[in-house]
Length: 494
Image (tube, rainbow, N blue to C red):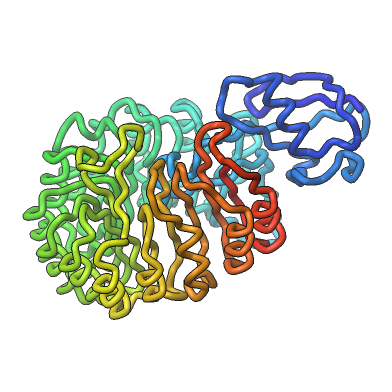
């Protein structure tokens, strides 16, 4: 059977001779070897708009000799390395536009998120921009600035939400937003390629009376001036949600938190992952934010800041990157009256015991295990994620069925086995959704199979076997068990 491949970015390859007994995954691997041998990517194959199942033989599909398969290249990097892992990374989908059926009622949401080659369908979109459209969602479309301006020009004046993360933003796009003066409740341009953010204060001035949610996460150009975001939010008295994750500049953070405290009394959620504000500035912000329900922030090293959080009666969800697993710190954290607790333990990369090839020095919860278990046992949180190098089974037992995620998420090595600890604590497996194994941890196939049987809700598994040939024994039995036992599995990283 001869097959050809059409790529989302344009161009084709083939024909390629494939035997009918080959599996779809084998075809994808052969294509990657032929076309992108040096890149860390894999090919996903679509037939008539549906993904081909990787384990299927070609003879079990509807493919015939001479078919052309739509092909999407996906990154082979772990999910956690694709920006903020709390932010959505949407599955790519063909640019199939929604139909405008007058009988179905008004179209208020135009969802084009994740569509590739959307630019080729822009001329077909104009009829969709009816006066009833209030939400335009083009997240992760990778659209260039001229196309964004074209979309904004077509959008009705009543547009209230513009969700455009992961696109290409330049001053002309921001200028267009200012000129149209949409009554936007939501503006999200985060995680985009942005050449210049200097117009952000003007956007705040024009849209601030309506704006309730502002997403500018990971826009590196915001660092060029410490007051860009601070100046914008001074005009946003109704702001409830702000995302400036990954912008770790002390001057920027000082000005931003100060401005939020002074001008945004309704703030409910702050996404500041991978930012490390000064303790005094963060504490001052917390003292003014009585409505805060969700907080993400990094670099917490003292229990005093945690105690300040305890005074926030509205706080329900917390993501902290902690620099210590000291019992006093953990006692303060576990006293917080929150429902969701996401704790990431990262230490000093220069500290003793940090290997040179570790991307990040991840702490474990193996010392003072009895005290830590006592603290976690008292926590009222019903959903707990532990981003750690390892955890003593006693600690995991205290967390129990509240455990949602476990593992280092980044490259790391440890003398303790995460799989071994899980086998000893079956109660903490029943609701586990994400599992990451340390680099350089020898995986026992039987142990992995046992864990797979204990974790029916697993969606993401990162086995993190490092370089080729490191794993001493085959793990086929364990991997097959993941496929058989974990019906919700979406991502498996070897």
